[in-house]
Length: 113
Ligand SMILES: NC(=O)c1ccc[n+]([C@@H]2O[C@H](COP(=O)([O-])OP(=O)(O)OC[C@H]3O[C@@H](n4cnc5c(N)ncnc54)[C@H](O)[C@@H]3O)[C@@H](O)[C@H]2O)c1
Image (cartoon, rainbow, N blue to C red; front, side, top):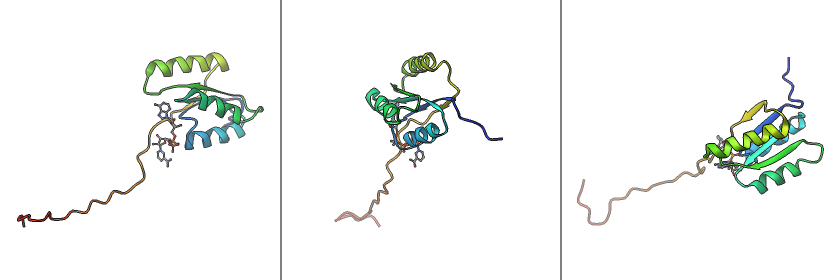
């Protein structure tokens, strides 16, 4: 049996980034209600608005490195939506996808063999 996301309240941290925004859009299409957490409140608020009037979404400015910030936002989201069903802990910083090539050369005048 498929798990229905209709009216489920989903918190997404790092919601405005690549994966978070994609998850928000996919969940919105499934009828979920979204609590969008990202560092800058204006980004999360604009994201909620950008999902359209038919989507029940609200943004909060949250720093997941701060327990106080997360606790305050979770409490605010629970108060706003009445409950929280799912949390997607997505916020984070990825390593840059670059390969650093270090070319080791014997410095001029080096006598080590
Ligand atoms: N994109 C990938 O292929 C990939 C692969 C493996 C793991 N990941 C991990 O998944 C997560 C999301 O990846 P992404 O590509 O969407 O990254 P992204 O940089 O596009 O988005 C990350 C989001 O997290 C937010 N954020 C950063 N620090 C925060 C904090 N302290 N509190 C709240 N929000 C914060 C940023 O503002 C941003 O909106 C990262 O942790 C990344 O390391 C990504």
